[in-house]
Structure formats: C-alpha cells, structure tokens
Image (cartoon, rainbow, N blue to C red; front, side, top):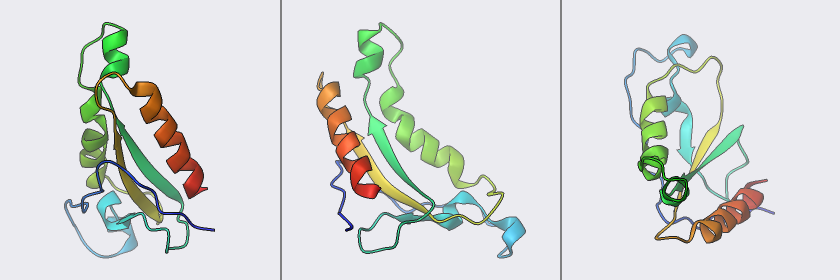
Length: 114
C-alpha cells in the first residue's frame, strides 16, 4: 500500500543542461520526478535531511543544512550511466536542537517508500 510522504520542504523541479534527447545524453534532471504515493515505485527515492545540529554538537563548521539543495544542484546536470526512475520526496528540515525528532521523521518517511 502506497503512502504519501509528508516533508517540511516540497521538492522543486529539477533543471539542468540538455545536450540531446537520446540515451547517451540522459542526465539526472531528466530522470527525477516528484515522489507520489500514486506512482509505482522507481529505482530510488531521494529524501533530504536539512540540519546543522549534528555539526554544532560536534563543534564543526555549519553548512550541512544546505546539503540537500547542494546535492540536488550538483547531481542535476550529471550524466546518468543508465536510465533510472528517480523520485524526489523533498526535505525533512530540523529546526533548533530537535535532530532526533527529525531523524525519526526521516525514518518514518523512508519506511513509507519501501
């Protein structure tokens, strides 16, 4: 049974460069679609986790909260070696020190995709 995944930040459309329409020109942004419980499962589902709390606790440099958007931007124009069905389920955003609650929400969402 499919379940809708509630996330804090809905996925945005993926964009990137296009060099052609044949298989050898396939890029990530061509393959990624928004996650939908109504759609058959694809090859993978991306769920972002936006938080600086773990870095703060370890006295590191903040910036991890920007990771989901940076990863999506970096992957968008990269070539795909083979056609894949990829779904983007958005991002779970942790506010303040509630990292454990955010991890729990991420786990619940991941289980709904299985």
